[in-house]
Image 1 (cartoon, rainbow, N blue to C red):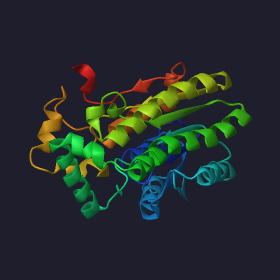
Image 2: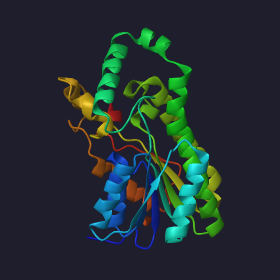
Image 3: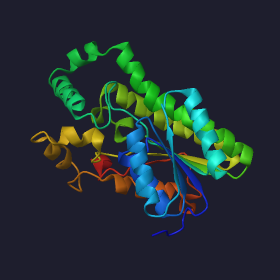
Length: 278
């Protein structure tokens, strides 16, 4: 049922094919937004569009490689051509490892095995890191964020109506134990980028904030949390004693997207179950 907090607005969501991105698409559409679902995986993106439209929402899919500048420019142009404006942007596209593929269970199981090996021998894991693996994660997570925000801001500044941009960082932005080295560095970069962009775009009425989720039940964490003892290792350290759900991150994104946060910019909001209380 549409409640209307984003009625008449257009939201562009990268990584909208699953997890946090999909939840944002559905939540925003529920509040009346027209949604552009951008994702590298066409089947996943089409599923999100179907979920939105079956509830009478408006949605468009755009196939996006987040690390490609021309693709991000074309994405925002498509949003303008189809819906006439860009009011909200969420940069949810991201990877945990260079080889991560959403929904590739066997491949992601191999990544988990490597992660366990890394925890057992951190110096070896550091020395095994390749420039190619490092660069791929930064290209998608950090450069991809910059490219999407830059392309969207060009339209927002030109239109003169302001807007809300929401980047997706992580608790790993502030705590390196919360993710592999390239991932943690990329998310710390997203956080600093968000603050800098907020200062630069604020005079145009564009607010830029970040989400810093904790351990959320998504494709990225499914395989990991099915290993005996791992879920408990995560949850027993949290005051709320459970993993978060994508819908809870989407609720936080809705706050940053809407008028309730009209005087909030340059901030990172941590829906993390109390991860940083210790």
